Amino acid sequence: MFHIYKLQWKELAAKAEERMDRRARRTRQAIREAFVSLLGEKGYNEISVTDIAEAAGINRKTFYNYYEDIHAVADEVSSVAISALSDSLTEEDFVSAVTDPGRIFSKIIDAHGMDDGPYAKLFRNDYYGSLASAIAEMVKERWKTALLRQAGAQEPNTSVFVDYAVAGMVSLYRSWANGGFGVPFESVAALAGRMTLQAFNATLQKD
Image (cartoon, rainbow, N blue to C red; front, side, top):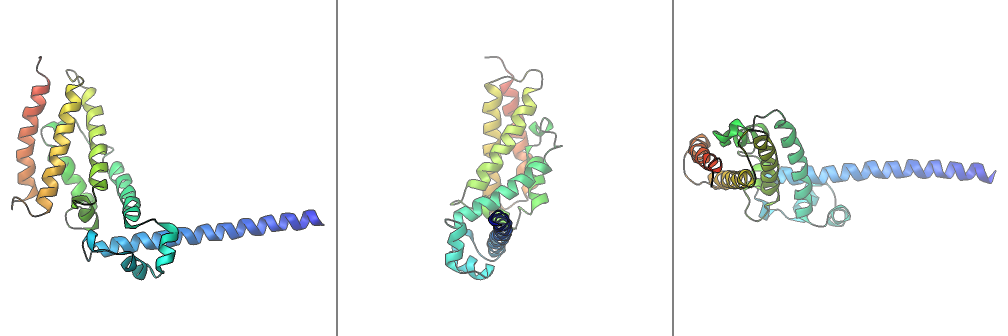
């Protein structure tokens, strides 16, 4: 009889834990959605834990049960964005990006609302740089791998070129998104493409 009660208790405990897991997932999702929604209304540095808690329908204590601070929420939101961005670039031709690096960033911008949406605010924020860094690292890895498969490409020249090109494009986009230059991004990207091609040609020259 005791054995039966023990089994029943384990089943009840497992069901209770499953309900708690579902509740925890819903709460975390509510917090993330509240944060993203608030990014559409105010700047990243202007959002408080109280703002997120009120928007998510929870109290501050509950927020801290799941996240250490706002940066931790932003990191989780950014991870979701990076996963989606990575999937969207699976079929992208990174070799031809040598002459048109802006195309890669334009695709990211167009596909994920990086021009004037919540992710854009995270990407171009000077204080929170995790999303910009993660996107840069993802693009660098894809670009470097593609180029090294081509005849004539070699290390360390390829790595130096890719680091230079991606860092430049990220910096250009952030400056443009923050109101710099006063021209369409396509114009900035076209100029960057010409400069990038010159830099790539230099990597193929023998020392």
